[in-house]
Length: 216
Image (cartoon, rainbow, N blue to C red):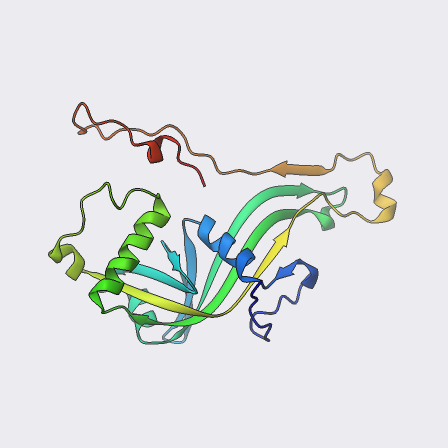
């Protein structure tokens, strides 16, 4: 199992036993998420921007309008930090101090560049579409030259990364286990409701299987 080198940049310092550095764990967290947050520095000020992403191998691809400040920043080769978090449960301890959350998070560092090659742009566009919902790329209309020209794509090569995961029940002080206070975990799950058709949808168009059974 390949792992990221542990550096001062990606090392999990708080609760290090929760840290994971293998590609499989980090990439699973990234791939499950529909949105990532990208941290940049603009005019000396930190800025964090949420955006849609997709992973291609050891890289993250982003897209948007060519005027996007995020894409311009990434395209100039600046260092960025990308984060993803999944909330899995609220952890209620017997003491206020030990309340917590069960979660899976990933932090990624890297530098990017503007994707200029037409084939690489097409691959990025397909990856982002399929990341949103697998099967959609081959079903929907492909981008026109005008749409393609108005869209910027960047690829960020992953240099360092780590994951941090908490699972399980609360951890109370030994003396607090005798307190008459309920303790445990409230599980949190993201669910997807039945699809709602576009009011302008023509009759006779069946709901695709990949939409009907959508889940992550």
